Length: 118
Image (cartoon, rainbow, N blue to C red; front, side, top):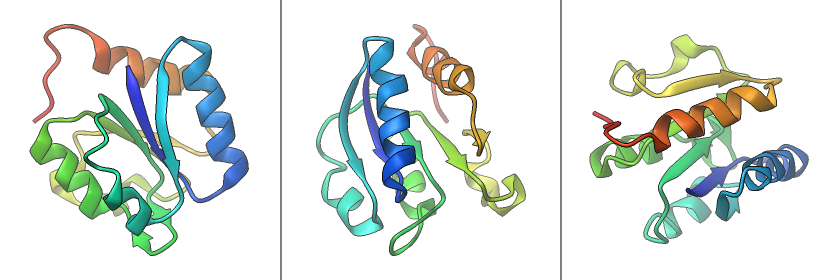
Protein backbone atom coordinates (compact mmCIF):
# COMPACT_ATOMS: atom_id res chain seq x y z
CA UNK A 1 0.00 0.00 0.00
CA UNK A 2 1.07 3.58 -0.65
CA UNK A 3 0.41 5.58 2.53
CA UNK A 4 0.12 9.33 3.13
CA UNK A 5 0.78 10.59 6.68
CA UNK A 6 -0.42 13.90 8.08
CA UNK A 7 1.15 14.49 11.49
CA UNK A 8 2.64 17.68 12.94
CA UNK A 9 4.89 16.01 15.53
CA UNK A 10 8.09 14.98 13.74
CA UNK A 11 8.85 12.12 16.13
CA UNK A 12 5.36 10.65 15.81
CA UNK A 13 5.51 11.02 12.02
CA UNK A 14 8.84 9.16 11.95
CA UNK A 15 7.41 6.45 14.20
CA UNK A 16 4.37 6.03 11.94
CA UNK A 17 6.60 5.92 8.87
CA UNK A 18 8.80 3.22 10.43
CA UNK A 19 5.75 1.15 11.36
CA UNK A 20 4.27 1.43 7.85
CA UNK A 21 7.56 0.64 6.13
CA UNK A 22 8.30 -2.30 8.45
CA UNK A 23 5.49 -4.17 6.71
CA UNK A 24 6.69 -3.35 3.19
CA UNK A 25 4.30 -0.48 2.57
CA UNK A 26 5.51 2.75 0.98
CA UNK A 27 5.09 6.16 2.61
CA UNK A 28 4.45 8.66 -0.19
CA UNK A 29 4.86 11.64 2.12
CA UNK A 30 4.57 12.96 5.65
CA UNK A 31 3.08 16.42 6.02
CA UNK A 32 2.63 18.57 9.08
CA UNK A 33 0.10 21.12 7.85
CA UNK A 34 -3.28 21.27 6.14
CA UNK A 35 -1.77 23.39 3.36
CA UNK A 36 1.09 20.94 2.68
CA UNK A 37 -1.25 17.97 2.69
CA UNK A 38 -3.72 19.61 0.29
CA UNK A 39 -0.87 20.21 -2.15
CA UNK A 40 -0.15 16.47 -2.20
CA UNK A 41 -3.62 14.94 -2.42
CA UNK A 42 -2.97 14.15 -6.08
CA UNK A 43 0.23 12.20 -5.36
CA UNK A 44 -1.43 8.82 -5.64
CA UNK A 45 -1.85 6.82 -2.46
CA UNK A 46 -4.04 3.99 -1.20
CA UNK A 47 -4.40 4.88 2.48
CA UNK A 48 -3.86 7.80 4.82
CA UNK A 49 -3.09 8.25 8.51
CA UNK A 50 -4.41 11.60 9.73
CA UNK A 51 -3.76 13.39 12.98
CA UNK A 52 -6.80 15.58 13.65
CA UNK A 53 -5.08 18.70 14.98
CA UNK A 54 -2.18 19.80 12.79
CA UNK A 55 -0.59 23.06 11.70
CA UNK A 56 -3.32 25.14 10.08
CA UNK A 57 -6.32 23.48 11.77
CA UNK A 58 -8.15 20.16 11.74
CA UNK A 59 -7.88 17.54 9.00
CA UNK A 60 -11.64 17.06 8.62
CA UNK A 61 -11.70 18.81 5.21
CA UNK A 62 -8.98 16.51 3.93
CA UNK A 63 -10.81 13.51 5.40
CA UNK A 64 -14.00 14.56 3.60
CA UNK A 65 -12.06 14.76 0.34
CA UNK A 66 -10.69 11.27 0.92
CA UNK A 67 -14.23 9.98 1.48
CA UNK A 68 -15.27 11.51 -1.87
CA UNK A 69 -12.32 9.83 -3.55
CA UNK A 70 -13.02 6.55 -1.78
CA UNK A 71 -9.54 6.45 -0.25
CA UNK A 72 -9.58 4.73 3.14
CA UNK A 73 -7.93 6.41 6.10
CA UNK A 74 -7.64 6.35 9.86
CA UNK A 75 -7.50 9.17 12.34
CA UNK A 76 -4.51 8.81 14.67
CA UNK A 77 -5.15 11.39 17.33
CA UNK A 78 -5.17 12.40 20.97
CA UNK A 79 -8.47 14.15 20.30
CA UNK A 80 -11.69 12.58 21.53
CA UNK A 81 -13.52 10.44 18.93
CA UNK A 82 -16.69 12.51 19.55
CA UNK A 83 -14.93 15.48 17.91
CA UNK A 84 -15.08 13.70 14.56
CA UNK A 85 -18.01 14.99 12.48
CA UNK A 86 -20.77 12.39 11.94
CA UNK A 87 -20.02 12.07 8.21
CA UNK A 88 -16.46 10.96 8.96
CA UNK A 89 -17.06 8.54 11.81
CA UNK A 90 -16.87 5.47 9.56
CA UNK A 91 -13.08 5.92 9.50
CA UNK A 92 -10.93 4.04 11.97
CA UNK A 93 -9.97 6.05 15.05
CA UNK A 94 -6.68 5.12 16.67
CA UNK A 95 -6.10 6.97 19.95
CA UNK A 96 -2.69 8.31 20.90
CA UNK A 97 -0.56 6.98 22.36
CA UNK A 98 -1.09 4.32 19.72
CA UNK A 99 0.06 0.76 19.55
CA UNK A 100 1.91 -0.44 16.47
CA UNK A 101 -0.54 -3.30 15.99
CA UNK A 102 -3.48 -0.86 15.78
CA UNK A 103 -1.78 1.01 12.93
CA UNK A 104 -0.94 -2.21 11.10
CA UNK A 105 -4.45 -3.61 11.63
CA UNK A 106 -6.04 -0.47 10.11
CA UNK A 107 -3.83 -0.74 7.03
CA UNK A 108 -4.42 -4.48 6.70
CA UNK A 109 -8.20 -4.03 6.86
CA UNK A 110 -8.08 -1.40 4.13
CA UNK A 111 -5.88 -3.54 1.89
CA UNK A 112 -8.22 -6.53 1.80
CA UNK A 113 -9.82 -7.12 -1.59
CA UNK A 114 -13.45 -6.11 -1.70
CA UNK A 115 -13.18 -3.56 1.08
CA UNK A 116 -15.00 -0.41 0.12
CA UNK A 117 -15.10 2.93 1.85
CA UNK A 118 -18.34 4.89 1.89
